[in-house]
Amino acid sequence: MKFFRSIIILSSLFFFSQCKTVDLRFKLYNQPLVKLPQNVKQIAVVNRTILDSTKKDKNIVEAVLSGEAILGDKLGAEDCIFSFTRYINNYGPVTAIVPDAHKLRGGIGFFNTDPLDWKLVSKICRENKSDALMALEKFDTNSDAAINAMVTGANILNGGTGTKDIRYNIVYGFILYDTLTRSIIYYNDQSINEVARGLPMLSPLPTSAVKNTAIFIGEREAGKFNSTWYWVHREYYKKPKDPDFSIGYRRAVVNDWDGAIDMWLKCAQSSSRKTAGRACYNIAIAYEVKGNLQEAFKWAQKSYSDYGTKLAKNYVYVLQRRINNGN
Image 1 (spheres, rainbow, N blue to C red):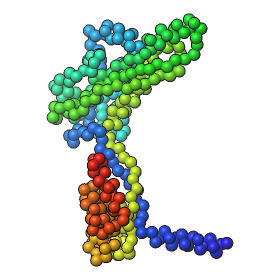
Image 2: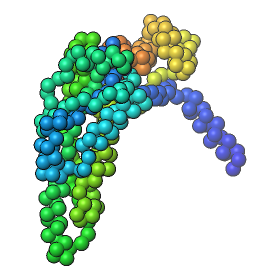
Image 3: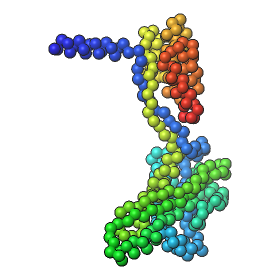
Image 4: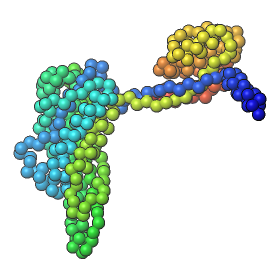
């Protein structure tokens, strides 16, 4: 039995040593949804949702009618800008800072499309050594808590018990100001719908629910400035046993893709069509790893059209899709 087991192991080793290709796994990156100008290295983040004193009475009426959480908008807006800042500092391509004097007067109701005065933007950025200003211009919560209170109150009078769900909506808006060009480089006005579940029958919308959603909003907005990545698998050739081809393969193994390309370019001139075709294909792989899709596509095309290399046929279409999708 031991003899046959040894034969199987040796056969397996021989089989894998004879494999013509090896598997390559590497990261590909998508461009961020919002690309920052090169001059932006730090962002100052401010909260422009502080109510004008002349509008406070109006806001109280709106809060009662819309079923807002007590202090929900005020606390939520603060959580939103701080979560944005934390996320940028932890994962973003730049740094962010919340100035001590970060609370600016804004309005209520519709999104404030009136941009900040550029003198104020420049002043805040200069004082905080920042190149751009991110302003939370709108943060407004609405829910069906008021309607639920009347319905559940009637249910309780009729002997009903249990819990309820409150559906709520947060409308928010951000503007990113670039001080160098004095232009708005990002503008977003949208809403998010959530449900607070399992609440006591007469409970209002919990402030904690608004705060948690505000943190999520800040992180989601900050994430738009980051590149995203994913793993892909590619096969490339390690044979034929041409000395230059083998050197190129070993250089690729240690992540020296420029050196690998140098060796495979020599092999692409080989009188052997198989060697030349596989070298062209490997060069295409190397250029994709380096992020040069146009060169990768050119060499993959050459590998298949000139030499009929099997792996290159589907690879051409993979590269074409990546080029068309811009990633």
